[in-house]
Every structure is written in structure tokens, then in C-alpha cells.
Length: 355
Image (cartoon, rainbow, N blue to C red; front, side, top):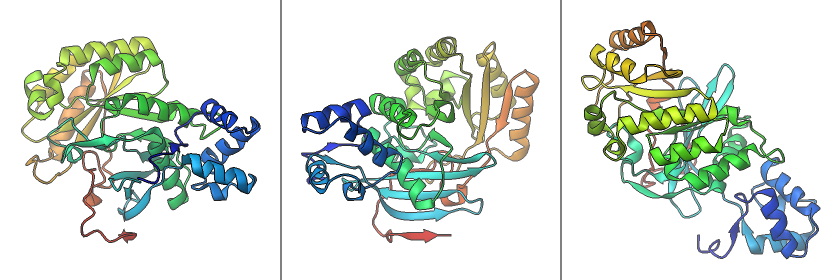
């Protein structure tokens, strides 16, 4: 990290910003598009690979910029093909990303922070708290590195990895801008989902951006009392405030919100809770995504049994809601919802693929 301290991260620059930097370096404007293409289309991870640039220019680039890189520490693959990768960042911190295979293609679960400070009781990502935000370039590096290592085209991005995306608002907005760039990765934002535990002021800000992403709100309880117990953020932003922000978001964007609801045995999973949830969401055009809570060491939470899950889903459906049960993917390798965390590298063998 000391080596890059005096350099600027180049992956996080827009094409216009890159053009401006190169102009100050005395370079012609067309060079910016060449370099931008190397970074975001060909996904070069070093300036040496930019073979249509002169050696002198590559040296200048290397003196002024660095490309965010991720070092693969461990790879685990589940029976359904779900693949979790543990990465080391330039500063030796670690994050995880998960690639999932679907009928329509692949989706990548991207981390937005090293750790998380939200403190949700059922989530492993909060263990150890938040260390720092990820830059836009580091988030892009997750996408490009996984695509290269696993030789796959990534069809969808879900900002549901380690961290709270709306707690890293500016960097996440920059990441989405770069992801959507027609001269770069060129992914439609309709193929992006962003999950938040409910940072109310930033839901309003996100609504005003009018992006065509899917907003997923981690609700997990229909009352303040229960939500206070499992989600500390609710003590700052009450359910009533969260619902008002969600309604504003829908009115501003026209995009249906997906509400995530982790079913925890004996906490929020009975039919009384289903009724309270239906009342809370009444009148909203939304989708309810039921998630059998995944085991996380130390929480003591257990998932609802299949009969209870189906009864909860069926009740919501009878009340007129689109409700589905999330397909469990990668839970045996701790790659499912709520199981990602920053890993201590002690005892981890580098570049080991676990099956």
C-alpha cells in the first residue's frame, strides 16, 4: 500500500477524468479511450499489458497511477456450482465475493466495505465491525477478477456482499456509473440489485438519482420491537420512516422494491408476524423475498422449518403479495445470504480450491 500511496487509482476514474489527467501529462486525447478500453473492456491488470501504448507512456502511467488488484487467497465451490472467493486487497485487508449460476446466466455478489458497522444480529459480515470503505475501483476489480479467474461472463451484479452499500454511498454511485459506462463494462443497471438495511436519508438520495437498479430492503421484521432486537439500525431509523422512504423511492423511480425477510425460528416467523407484515406493506407494489436464515456461528438463530416457511409464504400470497422463497445457494461453504465476512488469513493456505 505504501507503494501506491502517492499514485492515483485509475480504475475509479471516468473517461472524462482520465482524459483530463492525460491532457495534463501532455498526451493526445485519443489515448484516454485506448487506456479506458484496456482497463474496462480487455480488463488489463497491469500497464505492461497495454501493448499498443509506447513503452514511455506505459512507464509514465505506472509512475502516476495504480490498478486496484485482488490476490486470490482461497476458493470454495459448492455442489450447485456457487463459488466463493476470498481476496486480499492492496492493503492486506480481505473481502469475499460469490459467483452464482442461474438459468439466465451468472450473478456476482459484490462486497462494498471491509467489514460492516450495521450490527445485524444474524449476519456474519458485522463480526469485527467496519474497517474501511471499498473504492469504486476495488469493487470493479471484484467483477473483473472473478470474470477472469473463473472464465465467465457476469450477467448480473448484486451489491449484497460484505458491507452496507448505502453506508459507502459516493463510492457505490461511482462504481455504478463506471459499470454502466458504454465505453467500459456497459452493463445495464436493470441488471443490478442493491441491498440496504435501511439507511433512510440515502434511500431518498438514491431515489433522486433515478437509476434503473432494483432496490432490496432488508426488512426482516414487521414491528419496531422485533426489528430493534435483530437490527440496531432500526433504533436510528424507525420502520415508519423506512416505509415512507421506500414509498418515495417507488414514486420517484417507478421501480418495484424487493423486501428481504429472513425467517428466524421463534423470532419473526409465525402467522401473526405474517399478518403484521401484510398490513405494513399494504398498498405497495412490491415483492417479498423470504430467506430461511442461514447458520452463523455465535448467533444462536435457527432457520424456520419448511412447513413454517410455506405457511408464511402462502399467507402473504393470499393477501395479494408476490412472495417467493430464496433458493439456498452455497450455504455449505458459508457463501449464502448473511454468511460472508472479512476472513482472518491465519491458517489459510493460499490458492487452495476447496470442493
